[in-house]
Length: 124
Image (cartoon, rainbow, N blue to C red; front, side, top):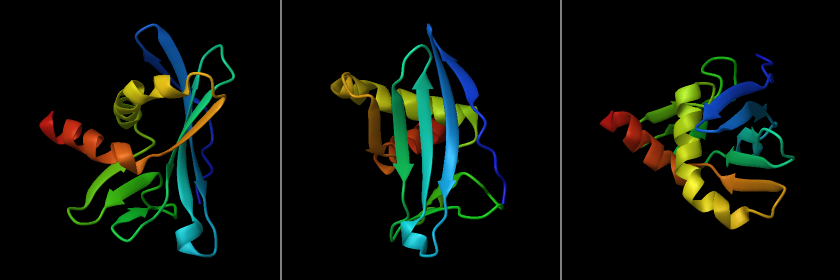
């Protein structure tokens, strides 16, 4: 399995973000998760978008298609290793991130932003 935990860099307007994808594999698939963590430069804050499998949503848990999250009814997918996907997710989270301004670590369910990002991709 690929071990790719390096920090990547993404510049959005005047803010530099560092991001990484971590895959947590457990014996029971329902306990697995994929986490996209974003760190704004110069702070100790972390925004974590957590994707867990569900009845109609799956996450990759192997080397093949690493970092991919899929919505089953229509097989729409996003790859969390692609910078464009990360930028779109960050844009989708931005309106609600101000609610957590005082928190050091913000953990949110990534699936709540999945639909908006897929719509952005298909509209483009």
